[in-house]
Length: 197
Image 1 (cartoon, one colour):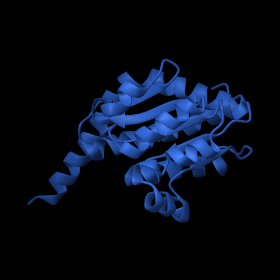
Image 2 (tube, helix red, strand yellow):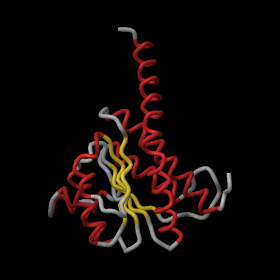
Image 3 (cartoon, helix red, strand yellow):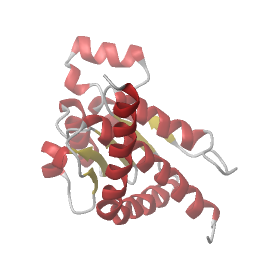
Image 4 (tube, rainbow, N blue to C red):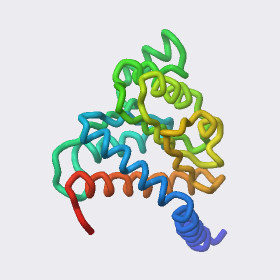
């Protein structure tokens, strides 16, 4: 096996997927930046959730909001619903794993907040339940998916935003998710701070 050739192919595939995604995702990413910034400037917050690598992405995004991304600015209200092991395990044990995010959304979410719902397949049952809960709480949803968006694509309302990576490979989808999150952070910072360029 030629490992160097396999590594080169991974890099090439990743770069090609990112460039192909730009055409489909730039406008909805811009819309998501505006929606999130509007919420934050109105004293709202962004709740984020996902499973596995998407849980790590939800936490990464919340950390960038609460602390900083690349510019100095006041801390912004971002909460990852994936981090409290006592809450997650009590809900999963007492009720059902599919409710681990939705119960938190119902408790913490307010009208005008935004839910960042992350699922590479668009079919994560607990993320789907979180979307239902967000709609009950009059929150906007930004869905970050791939593989055509799965079941999540059918749940989104006219005010929601779908950021769907045009790929069926989980690794490539996750790589585009990461740059998408960085675009969101950068755009929020620019709008929040009034950066012109």
